[in-house]
Image 1 (cartoon, rainbow, N blue to C red):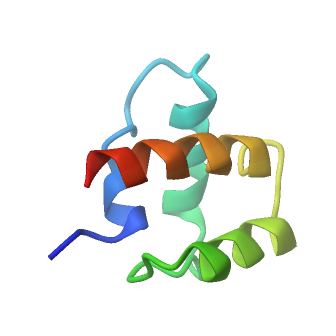
Image 2 (image 1 turned 90 degrees about the vertical axis):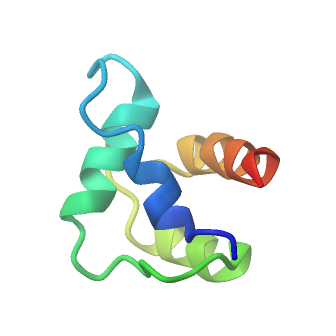
Length: 72
């Protein structure tokens, strides 16, 4: 079974802060309402669009989603 998007993105935590993917992962980790079990693009995308911040950006989500899909 494929792991959730949340668990995949956590693998970017602790990296170089200049990388937007690292900042996204850290922000996502601190976001207590993030849909942690989801692998559904629409659910995740809606959440990101609703709760976007300087580090939780839709452009970075799209890049991470493409990596996540390719990782499967």
